[in-house]
Image (cartoon, rainbow, N blue to C red; front, side, top):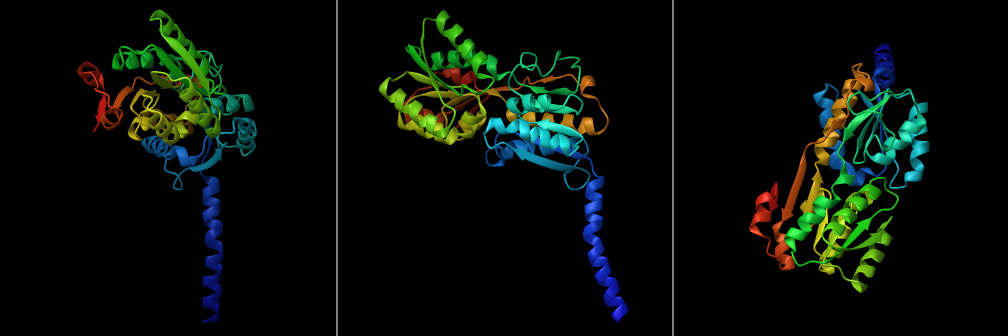
Length: 324
């Protein structure tokens, strides 16, 4: 009986070591994000779904090392370097600042990005069809949507003359987005007021400024901060009765009036697919940068009613989704 007890104890001790050895044998992905899982959970789920489409399931045949900058972009170089030291097989960079930091950290380790910036202008790749080097990914060009968003607000409010734009000056997409808005506003002789915010406190201050110098409507520029702080932004826009358009559907779903932009969920699913392809032996240079063709215009009719706005029928007809 005693020998049997000793044998069982030996098995129990060996089991965690066996599991650990199995985990070490799995390929390891480095998952790098400028934000935090609290705000990006649905995008992480989409990434897992893309991995599954390529045949990989976390904990079964792949391990993932997560690194989150918690909206402190200056931490990204150290987090990238840490993933490189840990010899992950590929880095999945989930936003533009992460992709830039990862590329600076290594010229050999494969990197797959999801970015709303122009990947050529940001120096991530030299070509979309044949990206040389160690980087490829998914682009959704958020910086080029400013004129479109302004046009949607003008159709909603034909008499509007003054528009505010809320931007995060530290985010790479801000400059092209703002340039696009200004060019469109100049063509229709509209006034543009630029409000800047790099933190939640800055957002409060921006709306206090807006209360002193009211605008007919607000464009919320694409950025990690503005997407993560969507509830704060929507609450303030409602309190100040400022009709606003946002860059991602998550904001319209959370109670924002309108949104126009790329489908982030689909982009992050594709990020997972490409990451899985790299694990299977594909080289980044052989995988063209995927340009997201899925742009969505969403109107929240409940919010429109709360604002006392009548959405023109022709504008409703162009919406991809109307939330009631």
